[in-house]
Image 1 (cartoon, helix red, strand yellow):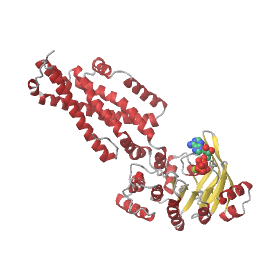
Image 2 (image 1 turned 60 degrees about the horizontal axis):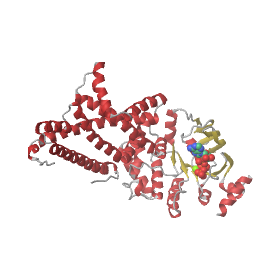
Image 3 (image 1 turned 135 degrees about the vertical axis):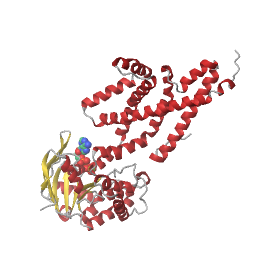
Image 4 (image 1 turned 30 degrees about the vertical axis):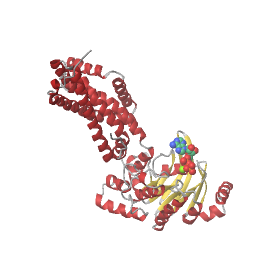
Length: 224
Length: 245
Ligand SMILES: Nc1ncnc2c1ncn2[C@@H]1O[C@H](COP(=O)(O)OP(=O)(O)OP(=O)(O)O)[C@@H](O)[C@H]1O
Ligand SMILES: [Mg+2]
């Protein structure tokens, strides 16, 4: 088999692909933030909540952690319109990824809640702090510190996971790569370029997150 | 009227009684030491007093007023007046020494940050940590952490301070740093409950000593009596054993 690499044909598409990468970053960022909020309340409910609340959250987590994300998004994309909620593919992907992230981030943050030394919580209590103050000043900073590395990993995984959006026609990086491929038929060049962009994007994200974590939370993180 | 009066107090972990018939009283400015073998309930008594473990029977009166440990508002008021220093320091790992001390006065009492910070620096300097304001707990030695914990408790200006074996996790050479800090407080007239194995220290500072065993107060009285003329055989046993060391 002889295949001559001809990057010349695809390099012109670089800005177009980079624009797609930017959209990928957006989706990952928004879904991660949404997921963090869901995860925080989920973790609080599982740690401090009563039995029924615990059940509801566990049900949610179990469902989203044990079904493929693709299926979840399909479900949202095709089932919700039947319920009268019309979604663009971008919205469906975003909602799906957010809910999925929420489940994983509930579990990650719950582990963080549990790893807070009971000692520190008791000390906070005897100093007169309310539950909200204890969460705000003791639990969250602790979680930020010990969970920063796993949370960054989750964030990187989600950035890569956004490629799923291409299936729904969202023009993020992978979606745009499909388009360029359809026009040029230079598959190897297009997808190696795309892979390169993903690597750049995640490396930059890792670096920024690592520096941020070290500076903000004194998290002991590996920088590349 | 005693400042703190405990009447026939009973407490349990998972229905397993760990304190029974606890009765004692403290006058303002007195130092009560709790001594006794491991597992006798000394820490538990302090935990009950500060409201971490609700008693199942009996009463605690503060300045003649009965404390309702089931009521959140009462608990908050109680923690305004009582403070505890735990054996394991329990500092907030994510805060510097200074922040550990200022957090409660600023966030719980809502006092102005500047003023609180000045006071905190004075307190930390008083316990010999003038050069450690910005150090995190994991950058401090055990004795230094323990003194931060004492400063943190004092920042709320408690009337009664509970100290749980504040020296037992320390190397011998660090013990004196912490004991000196406590002597200073005693000189200022702070009411204190001290759980300690440092018998020399207990004897020197205490107004009264309670010898506990199996969740009971076996004997309660001035240190000279507990150490030199104990009435109960168990006390005599314990004291002779521990003094021989
Ligand atoms: N969280 C807990 N759950 C169940 N039982 C406990 C708990 N904490 C303490 N106990 C039990 O209560 C009893 C009294 O314990 P406590 O810690 O008050 O003893 P202590 O006198 O402080 O002992 P030490 O000198 O070892 O610190 C012990 O039998 C102990 O096993
Ligand atoms: Mg103890």
